Image (cartoon, rainbow, N blue to C red):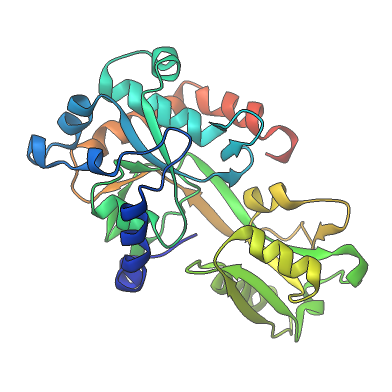
Length: 287
């Protein structure tokens, strides 16, 4: 649930800083290795020449993209999907792609992942990236590989039990996300008389910390993200109300020759049941 191209200019400085620092995952990303200039306009040939796929992923969403501090390795459904795409591009098996480490992971944020596709540092972004009509004008997206919904986390001790209890409350959301709009639309659709305000934060841990400190009254985000921050002090507010459906797709540069390969890979994995197995493996009961 992140930024569109109209937010690009405001986010470009952050992306440039990422480029300068070579921000990457546990593989230690090489900023220069993303350039497509050596192989003309063919992204696929660039990846083949480089020998690995550059993928933007989340590092803090358990079950999707998570940098495990115990192993210092990325894990999750989206991490495995990146290896499948790398295998398809490089002409190897999925197991070979994993064993040989043919994906270099870069941890992305709502502010950086779109620009990092545009400047060719990333070949794909597979990071709970919600498909919207507006974003499709700027980037190509695969068929959705997973659909999630927005949830609202509150402190159990706060005594809130219905959406109406959000009236006058402060809801923490991620900067550049569409979460606030989803919550507002849900309240209207459900006929709930409540007018909360929204405060934006740069990261999910910041929102959870603000909730724990009492600086916000609720934390709203995709339920897949909230699952990683659940503990015995918090709960979802009226979880039976499903709203703000989030279709996650793999993003590629607009018009890239990589787009078709990504699409064929995703649809194939959906058709043959691999994705269902991944959901069971990584999400289990929370699916």
